[in-house]
Structure formats: structure tokens, C-alpha cells
Image (cartoon, rainbow, N blue to C red; front, side, top):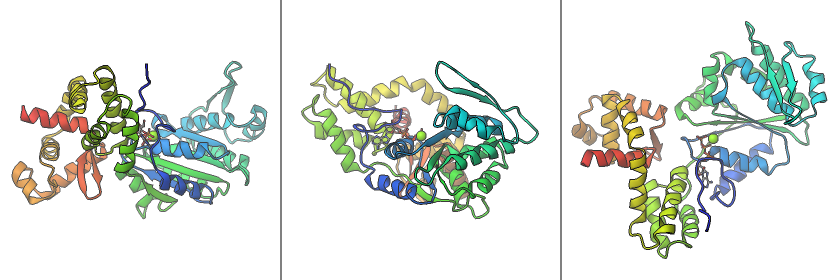
Length: 365
Ligand SMILES: Nc1ncnc2c1ncn2[C@@H]1O[C@H](COP(=O)(O)OP(=O)(O)OP(=O)(O)O)[C@@H](O)[C@H]1O
Ligand SMILES: [Mg+2]
């Protein structure tokens, strides 16, 4: 049986990786210089895929950490140190760790060769993190500079309020490391890197990641669909019309459509079929989500899904009776912060096209 050619959810590389030619070369340029990079986009636009694709091609040590799963400063230090151990001989690191201000407990798993590290919480855990960060600078060499990737970096303020300031004061002294920061809550990450008062103000090149260009996505979809459908172009267009080129949802819908066509090659409107199956599967989740919104948020979401007019326009407000512009605006801000709404060029849209359809369908029932 042929294999489904679409992939969604985890990090993608060839043959699932579409375009991003300009972005790839821009990331490479930064990594070949002495600068740092900040990549921002809404969730599931392909930040991790892009970065791992590029760093994978660069014969240099890569230390990557997702801050979403970090619970405290000492945990941050321990997890980072654990990843450093993966690149260097145990003995070599031990020599450095001996001189740390606070010595962690380290045990080596002889089977997996992985190390387990813990720092005991102290009144101030920052020296632990400082030592670990400086260790990377010591291990790095001019010819093979270490690349450090912090995913979901906006979480840094949750870990500790004073952390950004301290991190910045340590990192700015490093000359042999390229730091890459990835972030998905746009307003938060912009606050960290763009607010004049913020310690990370203009710390590196800010690269907003857009959706994938329609033409490239269409070619990719057609190629994958061809073995299962004659009208590959029409089906590819229908998929894109629905997902508006959102990288994750486009792959997901294409995957479902392909499955339908494999078993029912003559199926009419396979995209509509796939969409309605998806909405049905997620009905309970969507309903729960919907009930968690307040009244204003609900009106804004309905307006966006049904009318497509800008929520900040008078027409919109007359139609949905939301109230003063400031009320609409704070609702948009809230929904953007949680990722339900994204800004595309100059208009707002609901991030998840399936949820968008669910709202529309419920309204029109
Ligand atoms: N260049 C690409 N070509 C095709 N599909 C892509 C591309 N980049 C991402 N995708 C699709 O989007 C999905 C999510 O990608 P990825 O995990 O890299 O995004 P992310 O922005 O890091 O997400 P998160 O916000 O969850 O960290 C992938 O599984 C894939 O389906
Ligand atoms: Mg990611």
C-alpha cells in the first residue's frame, strides 16, 4: 500500500519540507556571523523545522532546550548541562564542573550513556545557570562555534522574573556562541526583544516567519496527491482555500484528503468530507474551548469566522454590538496572546481553520 506523503505535528525535513529558501539562507548568514537570531511566528508555522534543518547541515555542536518544560532556574541549569554532556567526553566536562560555584549531583547511566543531573535548590540558583552558560563558551571553539537554541523562549519570564536580565548580562559576554531564540506568543516575545526597557532589546536579528507561499505549497500538494486523484490541481486548490497556507493545517488536511481518496478514488468533494470529519472528531474539544471564552471574545470570534470584516471597523461593531473600540481591541489582544487569532498582513484571522468552520457551522445550523 502506498505511504501517505504528508506529515504534520512533528519537525519536518525533506521530502516534507516546502520552500523557505530565503529564510534558510538568512539563518545561515546569522550563524556564520557573530550575531544571534530571534525567530517568531504563531504556533505551528515551522520555526523548529526551519532551524533544525539549517543547524543539521552545519557541522557544529547544537544545544537545544525547550523552555516550556523547564520548571525553575536550577532545572534550567541542570537540563542545559545534561545536553552539554551529550557533545563532550564525560571526563572533560567533569574537570570544569569541579570548579562550579555550586556542584550538581551527576550520575551516568551506563546503558544509555546519558547523564542525570540535579542541582539542589538554593536561595539563589542563578550562579548554577551562570556557570553552565559560561561552560558552553569555554567549550566552544572559533572553528566550530556552539549553537544554542532556546525554544519557546517567551517562557523565560515565567521561570523567574529576574531571569531575562541575568541571562542577558551573561550571554552578552559570549563571543563563541550563536544563540537562537524561538518564540510563539508573538506579543510576549516581541516584548522581550523589542521593548526599549527590556534587557534583550535588539539582542539579535528578529525574523518573523510567515506562512508558506501558495504557489510552492500547491506544487507540493499536487505532487503528493497525483497518485490518488486525477484532479490533483483542483483538490490542492481546495485544500489551500480552506487552510490559507497555514503550514501545519495544510499538511494535516492534505493527509486526511489523501486517506479518503486512497480508499474512495471517485469520492466527490474529498476536501469537504475531510473537513467535516475533522470537525466532528473535535466537536467536544471545540465546545469546551468555546465555553471558556468570555462574551466579547465570542462575538469577535463569530464576527471573524462569519463575516470576515475587520473587527476594528465600524461596520463590524454595528453588526455585532461589541462596544467601544478599546473593548474590541483588548479582546483581540487577549485572543492573540493565547494564539486563537493571528494577524496576517493587515487583517486578523482565526488561527485554526477547522475551529473557524465549526463556529460558522454552529451559527448557521
Ligand atoms: N517548511 C515546511 N514545509 C511544509 N510543512 C511545514 C514546514 N514547516 C512546518 N510545516 C508543517 O508544520 C508543522 C509544525 O512545524 P514546526 O513544529 O516546525 O512548527 P513550530 O513553529 O516550531 O511549532 P510550535 O509552535 O509548536 O513550536 C510540521 O509538522 C509540518 O506539518
Ligand atoms: Mg517548535
